[in-house]
Amino acid sequence: MNYKFNHIYFIGIGGISMSALAEIMLHEKTKVSGSDKNNSKIIEKLQAVGATVHLDHDSENITSDIDLIVYTSAISEDNPELLRAKELKIPTMDRAEFLGNVMKNYKHSICVSGTHGKTTTTGMLSSILIETNFQPTIFLGGEMDSLGGNLLHGSNQLLLTEACEYKRNFLKFNPTLGLVLNIEEDHLDYYKDIKDIENAFVEFGRKLPADGHLIVNEENKDLFNNLECKLLTFGLNNADYYADNIKLSPNPTYTLMHKGEKITEVNLKVYGEHNILNSLAAFAVCSTLKIEPETIVKGLSNFKGTHRRYEHKGSVNQVSIIDDYAHHPSEMKATLNTARSCSEGRIITVFQPHTYTRTKKLLEGFAEALSLSDEVILLDIYAAREENTGEIHSKDILDKMKKDYSKEAIYAESFSKAVAMAKSIAKKGDTIITMGAGNVDEIANILVKA
Image (tube, rainbow, N blue to C red; front, side, top):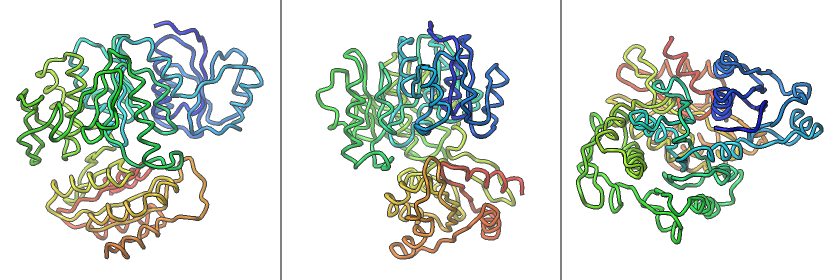
């Protein structure tokens, strides 16, 4: 692959996606430097393979030998490094636009989009593709043991990546094969409503070339009329690719059907009906690439999940500790239903809401989802990119649960309090789930070591 840049600087280099892009550029013999607020294992890994990383955002970090600045959407316009880049007339590009340009160097570019399930489905596809001759390059929005992290650097035959709809970032991509897992209300700090979100996904579908494929959940297929590309569907029924003879326990199994014809039997190592849907989507993608069903089945059976997606962290006093990234009501319901099918004891959920706008807009959904848990411990809202305006608090979820679902919950003002509460509540045979997209996994790690 040919890149015209000799030195690229990444603002927010420690992010899961930014770090993967930085590492790819290092593989391509490009000089890489960057900055982030805090040190991490990801940054230490980048430094070990040749990146220069500053643990601050300082205008002095930006030097005239830099050819391009790549920044995350979380970076504000008054960031001192961005301002210095403008002074020096250094070209700037956001992460999504840069990744979109990288895609142009690949014969096949697979983009996995949807409100939920992107990382797991991309992980499934990764597990399948590494069994093929494609030698894929893979960007994963989480970490997977078989990849040794969140990135696999391969040939220019095929690139696989997640495609997030936040701020319409996925419209900057250049896919040859697109996947839409599902469409629901989320990122309502940016989108006006569900119609606005649906319109963005339709625009994403229109990005596909005439000889490309768009694979969508059969529930959403009516949105994607009049596309130039070929349209395929997946679902539990009434789809091009669907599942028959489903058994959820002890491990999900089903018969893979294609337009009424039995193709093969599928056995999964990851739990829940939602993962059957994810695997059907992965099967459809791989079928368009003409990968043999036996290879797809092998890859799916080898897939044991990614970190922070219903990840079993360990057991203490015969209490299972699970960590899960779920931060949207639909994801939370899927996780809690999965836990219910896998556990004979009670489910104890330690939930950390993610962002103030999401908590405010989806308050009812959070209360409903958490009512599926036997015991609930609520942490403070994880701010992420937002400022606290005082309009919403975790206690509002607690009040909503009590009022609408007659369900009691406990508020914990610190991680140490949450740990103590969980330990005091849990009994032999119970399952504790730490849930959320922030740093709630630290509680799981503490509990396992207790």
